[in-house]
Image (tube, rainbow over all chains, first blue to last red):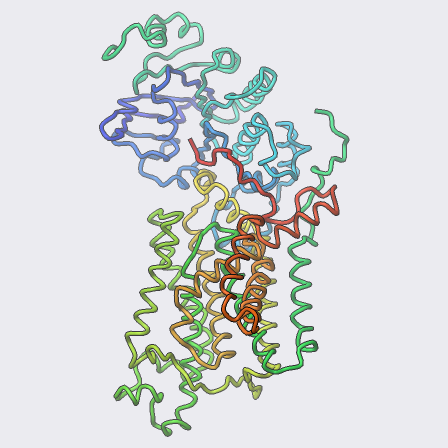
Length: 250
Length: 383
């Protein structure tokens, strides 16, 4: 397996506070990597840094041999990075179908889209996607009418429509019922191999179900990396979560 | 969740005959029928003016209703278009007013010796018409470039556009020797194209304006139906999200701003033809803010809605201010009306019609654009 994403010495400072401080991360093509860590460990910031929402103060993000750290957000997205946000962010005034059509962006330029109808060449594909995440009956409903879990799925479907090579997921199961979480795990297992995924998650049951390998972050750094079993038995991780060290430790 | 196989929400609602398009067709028919109802030439001229305002409001609806850009300087491209037309028409009066080798009369009064370089190309009417569209469009596009590349959003866009309007307005008033200053450019020739004279108090002018308005309404509708239009609505909804799908949000916003300004410039040219002069009041703050009100009343999310909103509001203003009963209180009446609309019809008259349609045809859920009222307390920002 070839490496797909390489993060080296990544750091960002928010007015002196180092949210991410010297993070190293290497992810292979087609891998599903879970990123866990206690609150404030810098997981979301790490995703923000990769997708360009936050610009790093130091370090590099190399995706497919291409440096991302200085690019604009839309250029990073065009290089094949998709992002799902923690608060599900879909276009609430648009219908589910329209949401997917926006996400399906093989040609993002202004002039091409001025000359095109809103429907793309792959309508059947979008309907399949809707079927995949159980939204086929809501296709013409505004996204605002969806339940929380459905909104989460819609955003996952948007990333699939976008067909990003690297998908960054921030707490995809937050607020989901047990059944919904199981269904989400199923979706993720299907995405594995076709896309490279980084999933930030708190739900260890979910992580066990989908994760090949886990990276644990703590205080802006990588604390441990390995299989589910390795992580569960790692004393450092245990300490970080239980917080026995207190300030200045680790 | 087992639903019947043909749930209404599953049926595609994006057929050709959208309420929006039906509205436009009715509007166009009404415009062409108007002269047979209005017998008085004075009334015809008055309604020509209202239609021009409709066009101006529709232009704002494109950038505000679709793109979410609240442009408070919409009168700026309008005024520039109007000056372009006035300059060309003024040059045609020279032989009559100041002799064959003369200058426009106000320049003579200001001791200008030679026609300024930027006036010279306006001898050509073709140039003037092109300039009346391109100059406003380029100016607003350029302003958009600075704002949107610099990631200026929300209320700051409103302030910047308003400030730009004031600057240009003051500049025009200040440069009296070239622009006619406070008086504007008055005493114009009538536009003549291919032997047809467009007199302001004449049906030909009305039909010219109605035809331009029809074409632009259809153009706007087609634009809103393209993928570009869809992406604009996505930008209005969740600006921050769109860029993570690979769209360069700034260039979309710059483009819609330029298109909106081009339409406003076109409306400005027509306004000069109807009013028979151009004046700094065509690009002043009160007019610019009025456009926003027209849009809000008609429904900013709907192109024919905004158009009708402008015609209704300006029509009512005209009627009230001329009636004896409301001579002193008409501004108050209008104010109360605006407050009521903003309070009870957040998506304007078009939204009201959309809701009524949804009641008549309960199967077809969601009415037209902008009628889906989802301004709930749901967090919109990206965490």
